[in-house]
Image (cartoon, rainbow, N blue to C red; front, side, top):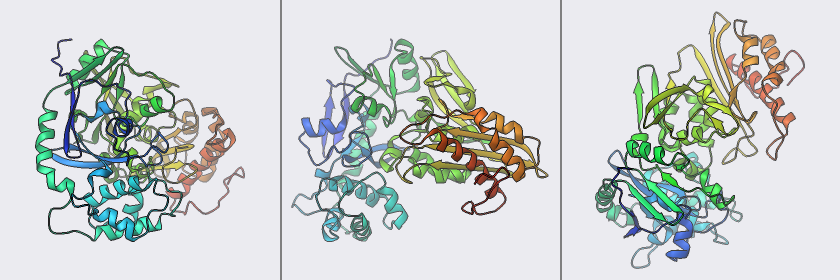
Length: 493
């Protein structure tokens, strides 16, 4: 391999620069903070990115600006921290011991009881405080989606967020603002320092600096684990104890983080996170704007990538059914070149995709929504926020004089892969868009899917729900309230 690698990762921890040349690719940020640095404010509650007790902020340069986001330290790997600024709860307190406005508001509003989860809440609220001086109730609740508390009932914490937002002293007292320019300059130097390789016995990790580096590394190590947001791979380590060597950390590749408006479509880089992509996608596809805020909590959306959701091929991934319904294509790249695959052809079987070991997902090309098209996405889960999908239905429809000209019905959670309901589509194509014909499509859905029962839902529940989602889409396409109980021909609610 003809790449000139550095032998260490560099980042800033609170106010101190860190360089590490010995590092396991499996080491999490939370373990390193608590065991190596003795910064014990960040807690381990779940080790899977659900409870938020481990929340810290990570700052990274994006389009020349320094952006800080809340992340789950329990599933964030150390190898992903090159050229970042990690901020923990310990950094908030002033030199004279004075509390930060967010901390003081938590005290004044009685936002803490047992205190175990409090540092994580403070860091999530701090991330909100940095970027929003007048947050709405909805913005506060979204910022806290990924933080669980068993004591307070959340209302005091919401009040603390509202109180803290009003406290904006004129002097530069905030630890991030006080050193922003210095951190920004140093992170730019680290980002420009080139690719990194750290090897220690069986452990081996790579941090490429360009997609060309990534192509070369994958050509040599086609079985390497490629890690972007680690919201899935993190659990392979913390819950399943799976080996993942060697590992390639790609979250620093800016070339994979672009959003480009092209003629008749939008191109989403595979490294674009849910948070980063939300505004652009919501503007063009409002249904995606409603779906994305229900994917995990804020920390997960700050880490997880749209490309990663496709690359890992999970049958319950939230974005693939929606993108399939929109007619998206996935762009794959390797040292040999690039190729494009329709997304509904990319998923072959459970755990198998049309992607060679030496290829990586480079981008997703999503066609614009025609003015005469209707597009809806429905996520069904036990909780509204921060829950894994039981069934997700995505529907695209174009009519010509009341007759179905084009229709795509795509589901997740119903099969070993996200896939279209081709039998149900065939019943509808070329037919009038009526409740009778919709009922006929509902009746053949069991030809498309044979769902399994698991702890999220039974097979019977999934099938009934999948059928009813088609009816819901029909009712909404007619301007009717989906909540209204209606019976289609055939007697189904």
